[in-house]
Length: 238
Image (cartoon, rainbow, N blue to C red; front, side, top):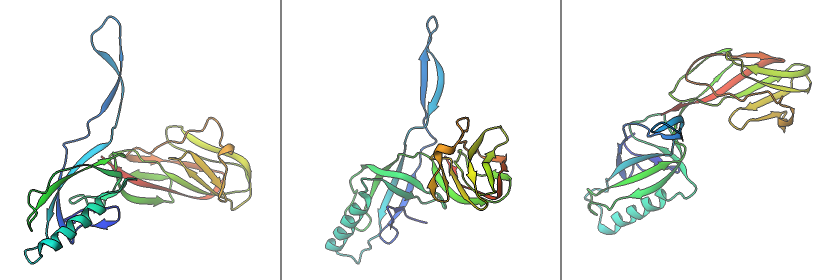
């Protein structure tokens, strides 16, 4: 891909693009002053929104007149205005999508003729890119990417009073209620929500349950109270 796709619009018929990529993520530390010593204690870090700058090169061609080039520029202005945020695909990053991206900075066109270019800054409120969607019916999983992801677990319940999924660290989600054989249970770990046959069953989640994320790497999950299961997740990349 030589251009960007933003808010459902493919910019390639009008412009090529070049990503001006930062060297990495700047973290926002959380600290606590400690009496009697200089500095502070690091409590942790937050991953703030990520700013990505893209250089757009107008490929209108010498055959277009001034009115046609102006029309193209105004078309692009409309495409770049997404107040509610939108998905962004960038050149040089095949298969990755940034979500909740808004335009927060623009430069002037350095020329209004056929070779004009400008710079656009996108702020990605979700600072981690999304890659491939993966589904597994096994118990041994390998999660690719460089950032933790949240699974969606779908279970086909056996007749009984509970279903449970647990990881190799001892974390688990337990749902306790009367199940009929074949009931479909969907656990959305990102939303911390459970549905049974499409109806909300979050009230049936045991209080000691933990909706855990999956770090990149190998995982072994165990399932009980079900005859079949699938685990779905989306790879996430810094």
